[in-house]
Length: 129
Image 1: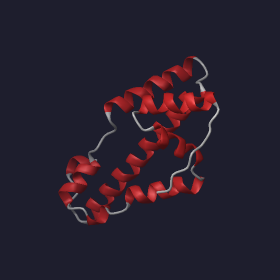
Image 2: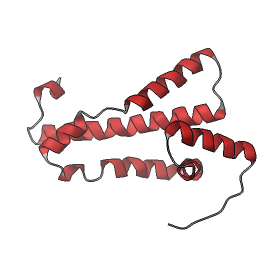
Image 3: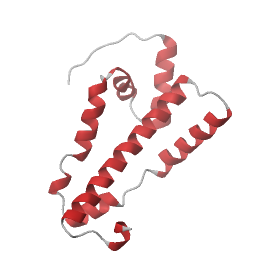
Image 4: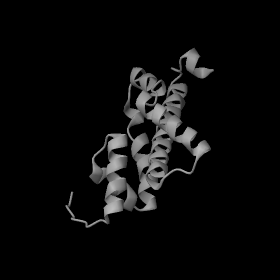
């Protein structure tokens, strides 16, 4: 990876720092998400699904049953509730968008795991419903 030093306006840095704290991630990761080209998001979906075919049935079963971390789910619910009451700040919108994107990637991963289990005739009854 290559290092780059950026000078950010104070308010932009504060928003990045707030989002980083709220999502418990490094500020560098938050800023990289802001400047990443749109095609990188499509690449994230491909990366999320890569390698699932190589997992055992047991591992696929675990993926199919995986859930969003409780803290992230609660935070998203809070942001959505706030959105019903008032306009979200830029940082809150960005955080909500990030949490939704993570949920979408998890859903894709789970769906692919279920698909693979079904192809292998190894889909448990409770997941088939």
